[in-house]
Length: 123
Image (cartoon, rainbow, N blue to C red; front, side, top):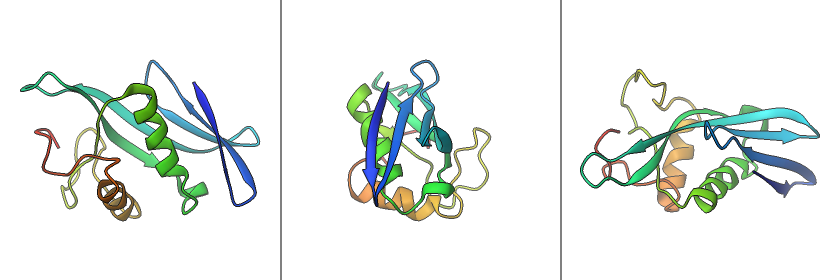
């Protein structure tokens, strides 16, 4: 599944691997970013959700591509997105937030794209 995203005179292809939920961002066919998500189920409610485990968008940051990727994933799967809490330390699944990931996830939470940090058990 893929979607075209245009910004600042550039065209990007956002592609979701259905079996791994990894999101690839390409510009002119070249890979410029990825987001890895892990499909999970809430033990209490049985709700399926997707946890962001890796953000690698440095080559295309600051252009709205990360937000477009997450919105597209939610559009396709209709399931909540979660991310680690800020200052969670190093997590074994790699989902801890570092560098630009901290303010990015904060903005995505403020916009309602990523669930609030205290709304899911395993974050």
